[in-house]
Image (cartoon, rainbow over all chains, first blue to last red; front, side):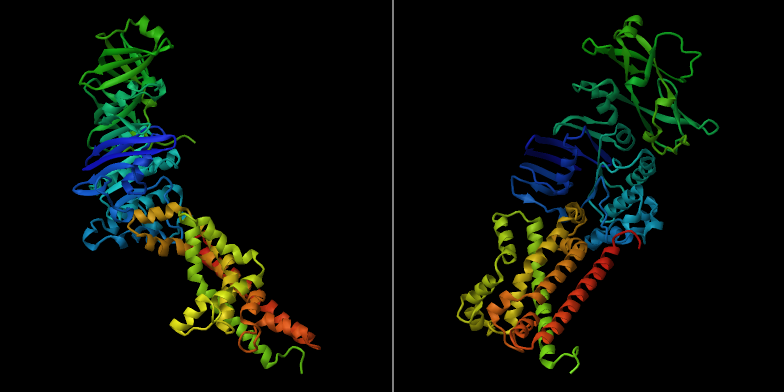
Length: 370
Length: 234
């Protein structure tokens, strides 16, 4: 259990953030400049707040009230930076074991071989950091943080400096370590796809304050409450289970109370699958849905309609059968033609092509053209 | 006598110069690294004053530096008297005094090179090592020091070369005593002051050039070796 409450002011920036986080992955989500990285640096002890209190489990790491401030090297927080920051003069192996050396013997819970195995870096051990690719570097950085047997793992946009293919390469590793080492993780990201795939708890920050907190579905459905969020930023999160893999077509059918969902890729996850769907990728229909190439048809009822202050679009919120919420951005023209209003039953259509398989757990990437 | 064979007196001057320069460099290295670290990473009031003080010997006339040393470290100077009373150490007119004068003159060059190399290290590497459990002292030993090594070598060589050539401050502080404080430059100066000393001056100048070149080549080789360890494979 992490309890975090800090206040800090800088020229042009103020942070006043309070949240708690439990086991599993907690995502700090928000636009750049919202204070996500500052929270991570405060947790690691690399910055001092004006006022604050940070506790992990029973250990008080910071309490400005009683003058407690544990220095970074005694906090035992594994920090993975955006740009790996491997020690350039040491081999991969020496980088990995660096933190272990400073960890008290009794605290060395995480051992070398499983980490190397889970991260798939066994063949890199004798190399120098300068000879690694970006993705390899980031995996070594994650391993290095893990092998110090930290109280929790802090990841500051670990995928932000990588291209889409490298991200696809690393996400499964982060998923595996989350499940293999039972370590609380605080994960900073501004990518909804990463957050919905990894996190069980989301803290949404804006201008140094917590504006929403909860499960990914709650937080992202609440996204439209935030002033200034445009239709491309609106997403809803659905929770479904795998029904059937169709290897011949390279797609997976998901079971959702409101209807089957077709997603690209052959998913391997056992548990629930969370899908982030952009509001601009949802089509609404009040009539027949036969004869369409879109095969995902979800039944629900309109619960609210938010006009975009005279703009061309309205934001329609539906409650689907089973309780999930989905948001659609449709033109005002269409909303009036379909006579949409709260209480009206409609069907929501989602193109499989609009779903980013990299956001799905255990997805094996489908062949990319080119 | 062969024109290129050195007399025992000349050998003495060369040996003394090498000893003075080596001692001056090695003895000032720890303080130089510490000062460089302080100037590169420290945040404290009076930092620019320390910076100016360190660089002062670079811009002052060497004679002034030598005179200040004489006033402070002479047998009746405040520091010199204290050193003699407490430890029985006398610097004035001894080869150790020559080493002190050379160290003071070479210090700014050393600090400058080391400081630049420390400033070139990404400070976040130290933060990363810190989050892995390394205390500031361990960060210094395992991250800063090895990564600054090329700069430290360069600084040491600059200091050594400066010490070999130092003349003004040395001759002012410890005079020109053959076998005790007569270093290579003093010996060359002496030779130019006596009739028929041209050959001696020429021979010793050739020796000075050879030593300086050897030091440069050695530093280049060392820096390349230490640099290779964290660059791409050679």
